[in-house]
Image (cartoon, rainbow over all chains, first blue to last red; front, top):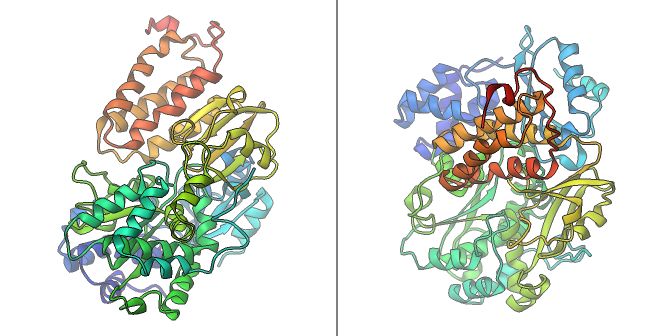
Length: 153
Length: 401
């Protein structure tokens, strides 16, 4: 069961404090637990830190790994930089799109999965690569990638 | 030839460099680092000892030691290897930095793409605490030091040191105007040194081996060894350690590069050269030694490569200054027109080359200043203009100049 955003923020404040220099940690905590950052969380963080709602929102929107839209509980980030592209990233992306019926940055209707593309994730020596909920998966083939994603909860 | 120091099989015990540093005065530690000639291993190449000297001289009760572990340059993964295997060396280097400048606070700013490295870093910190090398009154010298890990959230620009500091302060990663420099006014307006993972990892070796030993590891005027991440069309992609100043061809041989059409050195923001230029050296005076090397064989369409990199810069420009925000978009348009055939002559690109020059001169930070490199290099070196119009609506029809 997902916790409500205010509860997560309150927890984060206890853990990190409410200084403005803790903003990234608070946002990361919400983003990791819910897969996105709802307005209620932004408002709770603004209230606790004394930063305006508009500014917290602008910070959220600046960083690619934060989202102001709901995402799936599993997030796949497929590297889109050249070393991965040269080793077959496009076939992997196509296979994932076909099997799970979504476009890049799309989320399945059941809220299970979001697939994104992302610039270089630093696994070029084992390309093509992707991060699944932050864990690296390397030397992918379309079959291998689909199998990994199929196995997610 | 490889020359392994940071990645050597047989290494001094973690902490030995720090223990030795604690027997010296902070000023002497700074001088050893300065005299070693080491320059920032992230790529910008600012002399580390000068940075530390300035931060050490700044008067403040509170100072910060920040490790830039936000390696985001396409094709770079050397810091990943260091963080996986040598986090204790890194923290040791940061502690030496803290002792040298008079700081008790270390922060590792880790890129969001590397969350799986956090356990290794935390374990390294714990080992250092257990051995009494982090914490209060270390070795009875009255010096306190500890580190915390903070993560980014997927923004390339936060590898720029002032953008990184902005991010740590809870803001969007917009680079600051300099001066003031972080050594005087950095994190929370306190004197701050920001150094790359590899720089901090080299410091304990410098303390133990001495500045002269370290300087002699490099070739010519270059000091020390350097890690390079190589990928693309090579048989053995990976991280190799070479004397700084080594010719690129040495690295290419180690990694098994054959049928070379192009080599990109220094990542998307670096230089893209032809196979005829691989005798050039990996050094701050020649090919940028930031760490990324990508090889492209003769089957690769270099315009596709350019498109991939321009997409990257359009996505990663922070949007703060116009030359970079608008310029990257315009160069992207030009690349798309080249691919579709809507630009078919070199003359039609003149205005884009002028724009590239404007971006290089007027962008606020290194991102916009160097985003033009791949555009200029790939078009100059790898695009043939046949003079034949393939599109009915190309530049000739429009009369562009």
